[in-house]
Length: 76
Image 1 (tube, rainbow, N blue to C red):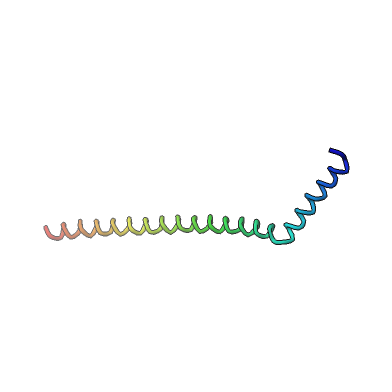
Image 2: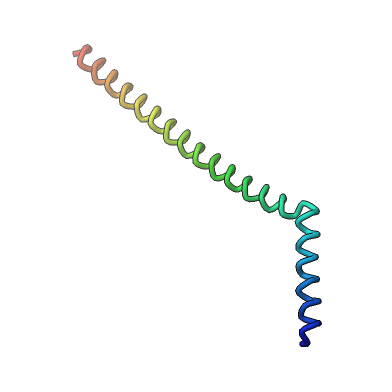
């Protein structure tokens, strides 16, 4: 490949990249990355909510067991 052809190819690639970045393709990539980060944050919040609910259920079960034990002691 001659130097002129190589320069033409490089210029065409640079021009295409400039045109694509001007049409919003770069914004789409950034938006997609931000969306993925948002989804990861939502997943983390969902895991935290799930753990909080599990903790509440466990506390309620322990309280119910303690009340049952006390009721059995009171019945004797």
